[in-house]
Image 1 (cartoon, each protein chain N blue to C red):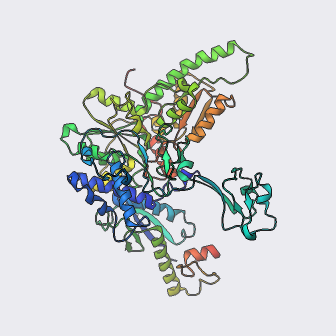
Image 2 (image 1 turned 120 degrees about the vertical axis):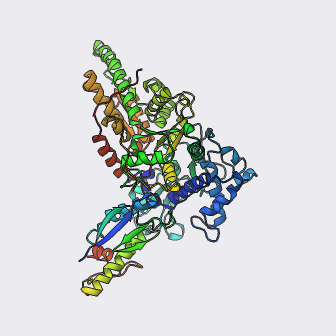
Image 3 (image 1 turned 60 degrees about the vertical axis):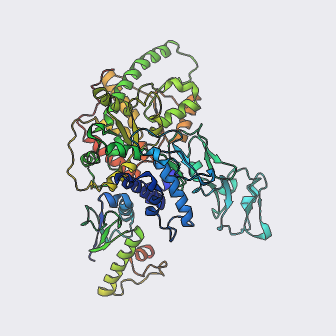
Length: 114
Length: 519
């Protein structure tokens, strides 16, 4: 499957607002490893508007403001689920019920219950 | 299980968030030259009164933020029950002069949740099992099963022997120690009569680990941000020099090269930046020399009286760069007071080189350390180091001034410190530097080195030395987990910081130290 590019802004504002925690959470997450490529990037065209929108993270071309590990993982799952149901439907079999708010067949539920 | 002060470290929590927002808010306030009378407006730019963000209600947040602002201005706390406006006298802090005074570390009572100090409690995992080994092993009969339900521990009887904790097949019994007190390696935190955490300032050594361990952000250190900002905004000749601790590498994000950090510090208004690793080099040489001389004498004396007690000698040389360790060792082990090197610290050595060139220059130490704020108040240090700033406080200045470390051209390092000096930032690095220098320069071999990080471990190490359980000729103590890279004023996670320090050290011009300053 096509891997999702996750770009985490590491400019001053975003770094101070917790970008480092986001990168470490994503890199340490074995469930996500096969789905994403994490990159630390310089300022994303001042999307943060002087830090008000920090941290800024781009998930597969989709730019997110005030990103948290939770919101990013949700976005990744949404994209992976979209790709699965759109192209190879049925690969998400064998999963048990996902945790609340987690769609079936996403990186999390698949890897955890496989 | 990691120690309490390691569990949340490197994570961006709401505690980190509120602390940093206040630093940035204050920095912008000062940079925009707002008047002291406008200070009451500042909290409203940080919190939203319409809905609580961090705590149960916005009014509590308001109270906490007001007090954090006072501390960040370097002023002593005023709390609501002091029957005075919290901002009283804040105008005194709008100066380039030194405002900071002890105590450095303070409990904000409005924020304190009054956690129970230390309890062994039964959690909901208790299955009311038939065997109930908990009550069988309890030596004081503190465990009962009210109405045949889950186990219950009577807190007035419990002696916290932990036998029930170990015996429960469901691991349902746990010990809860107040995080601030658990983080404190010198047992300086207890409860006041109302249940709020209280710091015994006579015991506190300013290590600051409680400030980053309280999950309610109820303990904070004072800062010198405002006074330093006033200096940075002043005329060129009054601007301070920055000296930066060896742990600075990797603290400002993965894209911020060491050279870019130096350039950013100058853009923030400092006249110049020097590596404290340079002062560390001077210290290494001084201590290696002292060690070689003392040791020759000591070993000679010992070989003369062979067949003596057989107990290892308690004469050793202790490192002096961590002020919390030095204070702890001297206070808890007065017999060892003379073993701690009397030399100046890397911070002072570095500042001294600047003051020698320019006696009127102001010097700001930038580091991971809260204890240095206290050290710089000591009469013998004050002439050299004017102010102390943490990495986190410096980063707030970068943010407020919109200095992008990932984009600015990096500076060249005019003169590099040695690899060993740069290694001071990581636990074991100080003793390692002294031992290696003593061996290469003075031929000292088979040196018995003892080292410990965190104050609890340091105290255990000194007890072992005192009891003759371990032999030590050189002793390194560090208050923070992993050494200075684990300091409360850091931004980076411990492991990545260690790696970056290692890389920077291996890029140094030379491995062994050199020091131009004559002693």
